[in-house]
Length: 99
Length: 493
Picture 1: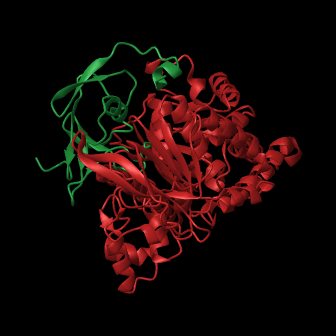
Picture 2: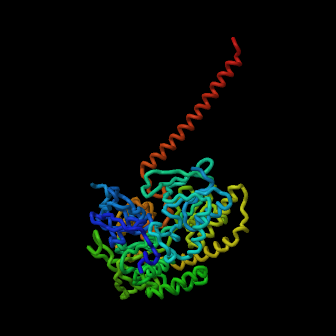
Picture 3: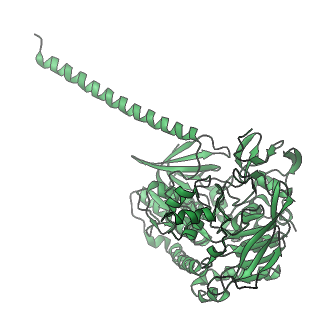
């Protein structure tokens, strides 16, 4: 049983966001991190120094590892920001302010 | 905005305090960073997910429904999605500064006579090779994503580390349909049993989790540790991700027993090594700390007038402990704001719970100490500071250059200078360098946009200018008055 069924969730209709240009289905109420996890995506940032991939670590807004660019705004914590219909989510490279 | 009491944190301690105080006529504003009250323990699924059985993922659900219904019926004003970054003492009270919304681009102020710090705790994770791979998350993080987003990160999970949080996380993941390949606990079963007497307050809960682990067929590996996390490129979108872990048995000194290493395939590792109290706001106010926690008296008062603290911020003891402390704090605040001394007899039952849970917490702390030789397994190329990408080698080099405390290590290596302000790597740096892990003395409890600080500074300046102007006006009036008197005394000439 998945967590949605387990908790008896009856979310409203799914909407679409994009991640690096490809469409991803999102359930209302979920954060950007939860939407990406549900789509099987676990990394959406590369580090400034080593260019290493990162995603959720602390899950509660403390570690800043899950930073992502949403609608051209870099540095958003994916675990806190709710996904909204039409969001354009992009992998954040380095500081996210290079381009 | 002005009120009698600001409660910072809407977890068990903050909710209990807000309800106890408001029931006694105190005007309360409850501030929390999350979109819904509940804190980490009672984290709720996002309302739009419309979960009809959220209790399926929770423990102590009845206590939560009492708090939730109590809050709805109360006069407590709730400010969700408000990230408090500073509490200031000013003449005549306290000012709480918070950044609203996920954007956090401007700051709002709430002024109050009293403040309760119910800021909870955060998880410690000690590093090991591979711990920065996507798919490795904190145990609390896996639980938060599950409770809040009703989402799990992938196929098979391993839960590892040490501490009482691992049991509920493993059972919650298993109950949500995630195959849990193992629960890897570095503490040995004999050590846990030795503390069993003192742990009595917590044991019924532990026994329940153990039964659930059995039901979900989760293998329990006591006195084992994760030696390394392995990744493969292309396994996830955008690069490497976790594909498995190597676990090994530990000997009585905390070293890996040779020949016991084995590989467990998994795509999620939920790992944690205990909880630390959040003390940034207390430190900013100058509250005295005892060890890592905020020091409080029998009424939950800190040594700063007008500031109380309750829950994990005063020492990690679990939800029942936090509820008791919050209740006591709320009653104390109500009495003190009326200018009377509270009668501790009124909160005797909560006082007994507090005493019992503090005893259990001390026992848990010593039972679940991290394995003695964990630093031996941290290779020089392991990243320690995740923000600044500082390796263990760089941290060790700082020590060989003569750094004798964590602050100097930070200045030489940059470990702890990033976004998280050293929260993630602090305990690891302390362990690797052998320096005592001191409270950080962070001035701001979270990163604050420079514009907000500039505005705060400008408001402060304007306030000062107004005061100076007022003084100046008063002085001028006095002067004019004196000149007038001088003239009248002189009389018409």
